Amino acid sequence: MAQHDPAPEEQRRPKRAVNRGWYALLILPFVATLVPPFYARIEPKLGGWPFFYWWQFLWIVITSLILALVYRMTTRRDKER
Image (cartoon, one colour):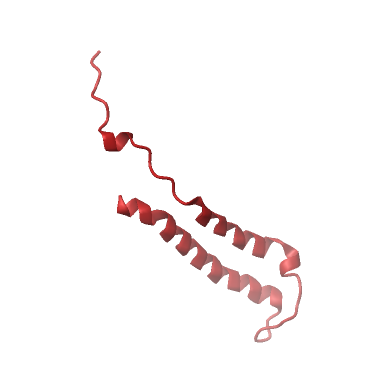
């Protein structure tokens, strides 16, 4: 059985670790929306909406922004290689 040549040097190098601190931001939406003491109240109202409802809707927008930020910050290094 013939052995094939070892992989080129660049393929054998371990990939640089992505700064995993950015992934910690992904915990924020879970804490903000799944821990009732943060949102289980009626006041302050916003446009007649109880706090509970507008808090949940606000976190839909914030979560989208966090996901976009984490994606950009963790994939940037892959494009630079």
